[in-house]
Image (cartoon, rainbow, N blue to C red):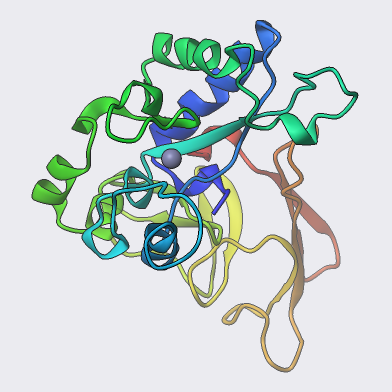
Length: 252
Ligand SMILES: [Zn+2]
């Protein structure tokens, strides 16, 4: 998968800083592989063994031995015309001018570690959080599975962002679902699965998006890079509309 928001929150922050720092030095990088499922890792392990291609990993999916399975690593590529032929697409992994090493040096200055420093398989596009060593051994011993590790990422209370959307963890560990409620002075509608609704929805006072289609209109604009992160509208009984803005500070 290519979604950095599925990775460890600190890796997300460092990746954003690193992309900016690289750009400041004229190196334009993109993020490729991020979190990897067991199936994806198994397919990669088969490459060069039971399937054509070169061996690219020593890690079986079922053994959780890839850092990608733990959400603490991502791979990058270049978005630059390295060979000067007017195209960038053929230079994603063109290391002829040492750009991977330079990008990695910037990453290391921010506290990331680099697969290019490995000896068994030198992995130049790979950057990772070094907190648990250069292999997942410590993570496996401490948490057993990536799922158990990922549960420790979420704050005790507050907004939790996943690949699906946002949900809100209360102090007792429960979460609002099928509910219209105030969090930090702002109103939100949560669907039956407990995810914050975005876009247009109906709310009849009990059920989000009731089957009979009745209820107030609800809208949350989650357009990124807009003047606001989002805004909510709730139509009152008298027809007036109440507007709430989504507080950026609520985001994780
Ligand atoms: Zn990698």
